[in-house]
Image 1 (cartoon, rainbow, N blue to C red):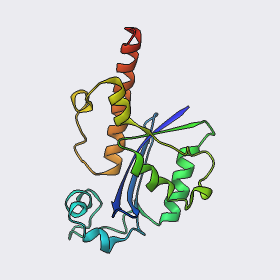
Image 2: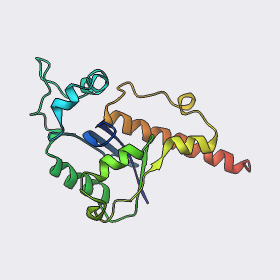
Image 3: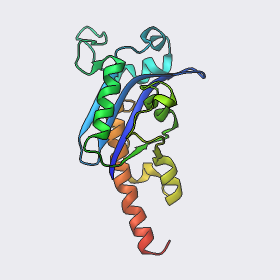
Image 4: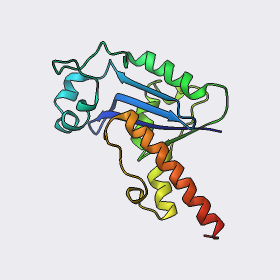
Length: 179
């Protein structure tokens, strides 16, 4: 079983979820990061929370504009193809993990269109790290410090990986103690 930890930054307006960026880290430490060149940038720039929290973590030119020539900026169809290749690599079963992952899962799946377009090899669900921490009765903030670059999809995916490693250790100890 291959585990992948991911995070998406997105524009959400109560009706749609529009991908801004996606970061994925697997259980071997391999990484994937992309910013969606096709994102609705005009709408994103009008969203105060995204302007304050997400846009600063994206690549910028020296004069402060988004650096759309940076190689992490890719067209959505390229991101979809690369994510599929990254997740399904050697044909092992895949397990997805995210922090409050419901919206992230929708953003991931929408790379491929409708549910009928969902590619083989990518799970139809994402395991939720917040739910796992709750099940184990632990406060994640007490066992691992948050990312130093919050709302950067790759930094948050790395945090998800580190959190899961810690949660697995706690689960092992609890199991050994008979909890």
